Image (cartoon, rainbow, N blue to C red; front, side):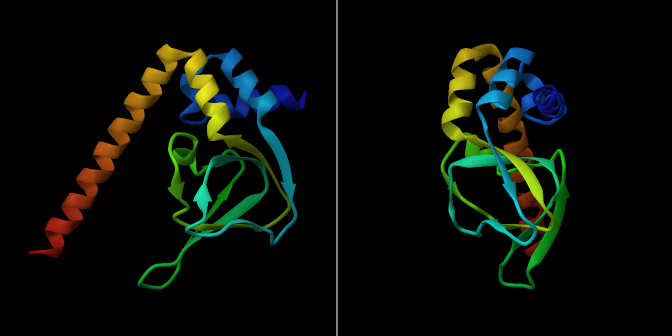
Length: 150
C-alpha cells in the first residue's frame, strides 16, 4: 500500500507529473526511504548536492543565510527539496532541518538519469519545462537588477 501512495504523491509533483506510471513506480521502489527525527539536519547550505528529497510526511525548515537576515521557509509533505540536484551538480542554496519526524524519498541524480534514459520523450518534456523555468527566473532577476539601478 505504501508504494501505491508514494506513486500517487509523486504523480502530483513537478517534474514527476510528466512521467508515466511505470517510471514513477521505479522511482518509488528504487529511491532510498529515510526517516529523520525532529531537529535533524538533512543538509547544510553550500553542501554539494547529488540528490533531491521528496517529503512523504513531516516538515522541513529551509534556511538560507545571506547578507541580510536568514530567510526561512517551511515545507511539508509533497514538497520536493533540491529538484535541480537530480539533474546537475550544485551547491545547496539553503540548509534543511526537520521540524518533526519526517519521512523522505532520497532521489539520486543517478536514479533520475536512469529514468530519463528509459523515457526519452518524457525527458525532453522535463528538460523543456526546466529551460522555461530558468528563463522565467532569469527574467525576474533582470527585472530586479533594472529596478535597483533606477
